[in-house]
Length: 522
Image (cartoon, rainbow, N blue to C red):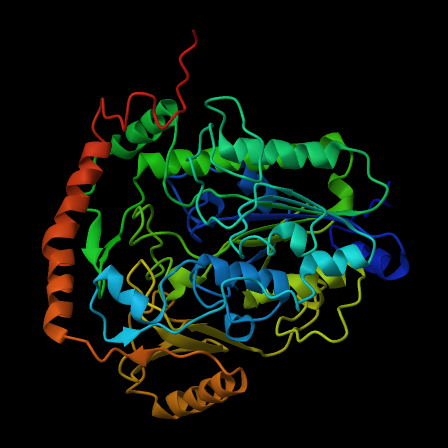
């Protein structure tokens, strides 16, 4: 068993001191949730969703209040966690499977631009985070969503000794209740919950005998669509949503599509709760095995919550936007790191990105980074140890429209300033996140010197990374584009409001067996 790291005078200095002196390495449990918004947890401000197990973990973790994903959509963000570089570098700039070039026209959104091509699998040239750990003596395990390529680019091709459930799909084929349609996971009994199944597989791995430290990655398919839950959880949250009276409306129009403004979806709330219960199972397995004081735990999401498009599941307010969007609601995520022996929450306002997990975990584990690999991320360990991290610049590049209504854009954040460049018309937005985290006041016209400074830095970075870029669609018709926008406002928005009321009505049901969660015994 690895050496236990303990607290000294309520501080965490002992972990870092012992780490520097010890040749023994901690285990690592990395919990990645799909599509979970920054405010989708009780601990981060939700009064509707109930997440006691995650809240308990956050209470003994470093909480990075300005934690970011490297992309507003899944595949690019996941590739960045694996490689420590931004999508502009690894070239997976959209979710794998999204149409590119002229194929985009099949969506009939009649946009001004055609999105660029992108890589459809994680390149084998990268030494991934699990590969770096395995090369240093770690046992590696993966369970859940992968979405970084098909045959030849599965988790087992990128450093994981064991893969349960990870393949090319970005959503849970077959839904959240068995029988599943997953070629990388044995079938479960009818009605089994997918999140609990993945947690049980991870717990089984944790509780097995280990001759080496381990890196276990639990990558939930939840809370990605299709959103599903049991009748019991739906009823619990339906009652909760209606107890004090419903808001008269839950949606408004963003630039292209309706967007949810209220957290009152009982189906999504049940899906979140089931995921939280699964987190509890895994954390309890560490305690049962006596490894909780020898294990680093990471908890995060791959990007912001789905407020628009897909299932219109949640609201990210007071942050603007959501998954697929260029604003904080699409990029900010829960970002927790618990080190061995930690017994209290420490909040850090240091901007942190998904690209930082790779160097941070290697640093905490005492593992040297691969010598020849480019690393854009930085280790957060110094900040966690009370040392200044220094000023840094963060970049994002999403030159696609996506499914949720966001715009092709590139972004730079430096200090509290955030500049968004729009590829459609070369316009920019400038926000002071210290005073305007909801991005309501565009200061571009009022602060041209800052616009010039950040625009030049962003332009140089895009050139240095050889970032892919969208092109103007020669078939673009602004009249047809306006028809799409009008339909979203005049038809889709009222339909969403009506569906919301139906789902919150007593007696509602999606189908007779509640997506397979109800099993009739013979």
